[in-house]
Image (cartoon, rainbow, N blue to C red):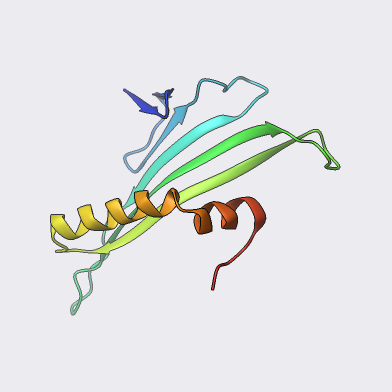
Length: 119
């Protein structure tokens, strides 16, 4: 299986577990990292609460650096969620749409690029 994200094709690795799948990106080699890891955690209910399902998509990508002490470095960018069992699909769709919209906003990009937090 593969995932296409912003024109990049990530191919699932055969070495997977039931709760995690690594996908190799187009720039991934033995010496250069370009990976997307998709993972999940099942809900852990108690006697009084049904629990939360959890999941994440995590990019790990190597970059050539300028103005740094090393010539290369690895960035990690992760989208993680925790939703209560029983949440409506429409509510999950709204959360996903809100997050997609957030990622395009200047305050989000300034936070990633410059470490700024907008008040």
